[in-house]
Length: 81
Image 1 (cartoon, rainbow, N blue to C red):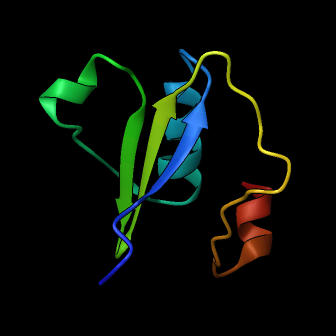
Image 2: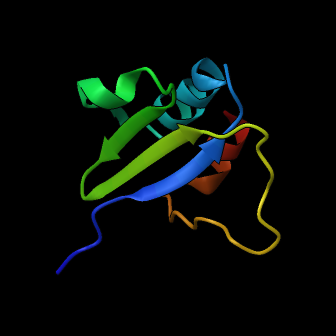
């Protein structure tokens, strides 16, 4: 058994901003979504064994306590980015 992916919600039309963060800052690679899911919007990313699925939710609301914790090297460099 293994964790397959983490699903996170995002507002409609925010995919490009999310790409800047997941690809530009955290250096994930965007992976192609299956054809039957592309029309829903969102984006999928992978780095090593971690896969993040971003799905459009309208209206989107932040969970009060839920969060995703990702350990990174050189957090100060990432923060500056």
